Length: 102
Image (cartoon, rainbow, N blue to C red; front, side):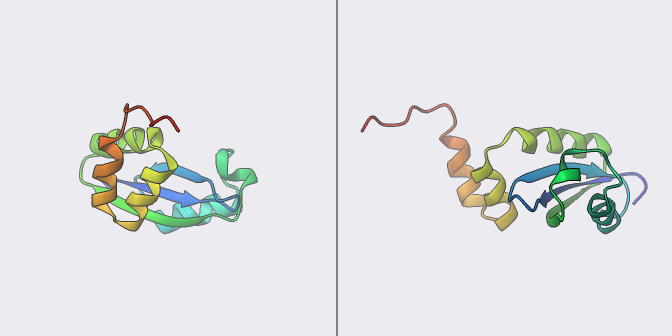
């Protein structure tokens, strides 16, 4: 696992999501977040749980994916976590469309 990297999503205690990347073991990274090893977003939102992990052979692909997911809406992140690719496509196609007036 030295050449590539994992993109991961953590669900924080406040129900928010944190998207990160690691070249190491994702379970070790989860433990590091939970003990407060990183002065990051998760430090005040513990405990956190790993809800998604995806391995990439090239770290550049992992970095690109992490940046993309960080820009996504909560609904789109949750569709990815569920593995609901039909919902992901639907949510992606709605981007930029106006909401109907009520």
